[in-house]
Amino acid sequence: MRKINILLSLFIFSVSLFAQEVKPVKNIIVMIPDGTSIGVYSAARWFKYYNGMGKNLHIDPYLTGTVTTFSSNAPIGDSAPTGSTYATGVLQQSGNVAIHPEVSDNDLFPVDGTRTWQPAATILEALKIEKRKAVGLVVTCEFPHATPADFSAHHYKRSNYDALAPQMAYQDMDVMFGGGNGILTDDIRQHFKRNGTTLICNDRDALLNYNEEGKVWALFGDKALPYDIDRNPDKVPSLAEMTGKAIQLLSKEEEGFFLMVEGSQVDWAAHANDAAAIIHEFLAFDEAVGKAMDFARTNGNTAVLVLADHGNSGFTIGTKNCPGYDKLSADQLFGTVSKIKLSANGIESILVNTKPGDIKAVFKEYTDIDITDEELQTLLSSKNYQEGDYTKVGTSNNMIHNIVNIINSRTCFGFTTGGHTGEEVLLASYHPQGDILKGHVMNTEVNSYLQKVAGLDTSLQELSDRIFVKHDHVFAGMNYSIDKQNPDFPVLRVKKGKNRLELKAFSSVAQLNGKPFNLGSVIVYIDKNDTFYLPSALAEKL
Image (cartoon, rainbow, N blue to C red; front, side, top):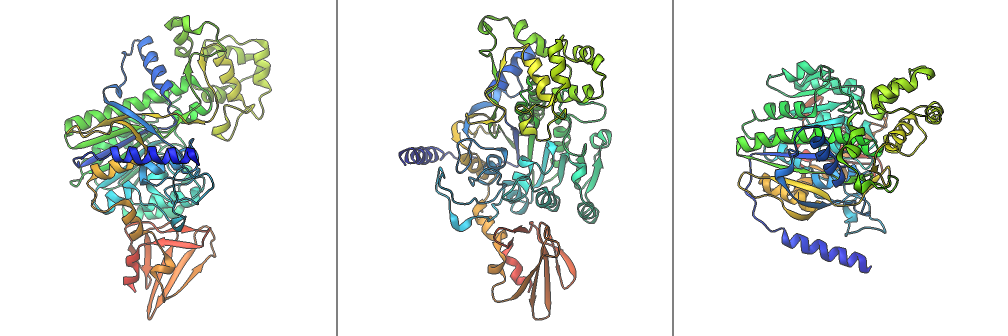
């Protein structure tokens, strides 16, 4: 109890410090290098210097502080609750996506049990609905993965793509660039045709040459994009290219725009303990930061926040497994990693199709490492060659894990885990009038800043209470029923006199007496309490 009281006191104290005036701006860009610990910044900076790429990162001039990021009931969070708190200001439990959590015995701060399962409106939704701004997401993961979903969908379970993907499509975002062609459904495709969204699939040139008016989605691969170190630049755009194109398109909107950019796979590479992939992923993200900051400085009416959602892997330059590491030269520390041409994932994709007798030569080609006979046998004995769960790549006996172990035995990079870590993350901030977010802040304060810099007159909680109301409150005294013929997409039907209203879960299009109309926000259905959450104004339709 004493620890909780201390945490609460620190929380209240930090909130009291956060009373700065912030001048609202027209455009807001939030950039998240997922799972990026401070060691990644150091390694990436030294890697650049060693390889003659300069000594600075694009983010360097804008570093302003640190962020304590966590779940509602645990100091170490995953991307779903941590990103959701940035997006909504509501602390959430592991796996939650922009939704009020359950009360637990371990809550770090008070949780309002009367709101459990209520969707929490996001900054993206608020700017689209309240400010009529253009909105967009740019990521390198599949589009309904945790962080992009945090800003544009609602559910208690981050892995439920059946619930998250349609919400994101029905948000009618102006821009969505990332991965996930294999996740598109016929219903999503039909919705794009109805609302005029251009869909670009696996066509880099079509995206980069796109200059039309209207909404556009550009997706690459069945799920995620490849790691940047593995990327074919002629086929797949870089994160910086996608960011630049998104800014170009969104900045045409007279009311301004909101854009969230995620370097999604720094986190995945950290889970795998793949140092080369970590460094290349972060440098690709940093190039995107450069694009955003260049625009912001030139535009004069754009604020930018850059911050990770949590740490990952305890990545360090130096490890106890490398005796005398603190006396090694830059060449000894960064020479090996600089010669690696592919991620462990990319190497694995080649080795599984390589004859055993050729594996040593192929491994040498892509890593400049001569493996031993014993290491060859380890590769050949890898369980199923691969691991399906990206969070377990660094800890199970899959080929990627064994490739990483071989490479790491030749370097002096250290890892404490294959999972997330609880340290504070670095914060960078830009504001045209200098009203930056700085010092040490809590994750909830990040959202408070976003609401201030957006100039919102209606708080996110007030918006939640307007667009995410329980159906039995909205339609109290009316005749309604829930059709669960399709349990994944139940339909709420409401009758009053001659009027008939039909509302499908995870859509933003309803039907009144058989005629479709747009609600302006998504309908969220939660099976745990058998409840639809929807706009209170719907009662007026009847």
